[in-house]
Length: 259
Image (tube, one colour):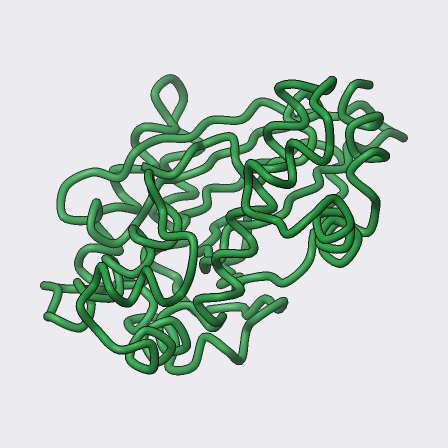
């Protein structure tokens, strides 16, 4: 199971935030649903910074349905006023039902014309006590109907992500291919079709998320030790990865996360 805190760079700065499991058949299409709700006083904002999972998200918020592609860098959003969102972190099996080419939305967002989904989730979120659970049930039912029964390719794509991002994840593309009993080329095609990133990029993202999480949990950890623990060649390699994706060195991130 993917760690639910991985990817959030500064968890203490989140507004009210919930992660709920998918229901019914949608469990094969959605890792989890994430629901932030905020009410920020006038003149102020709350910046949320994320180094996202190598996956797509289908997001409903007031007035819009958006498909967000996998990302290659840290992203942020400044929250203002009062609002909410209901996002589905998609498993690869769901992607083909929503977009033909996930590479086209890497580091991008695409507005979708899905009035039924928008109406269902909006009505649930405005329904009072238990609104989050109702939104997840309705969203789950909608996506299960859209995706339909999984074929062998969709199940294989889900297995790809389990091997690359789950517990006891593979440390290399070759190891992942061996576990799935496919060629490296087949592994690459699966990732390209269902995620939009290469398997190597997915491994690097998981490694960076885990390193950032460990820095938050244990700010006193030696950076060379941290680099070795998560498979980096050395401290310099860890620093390059942090700078490339987060824009800051691990030492600076550790100081920021303490605040």
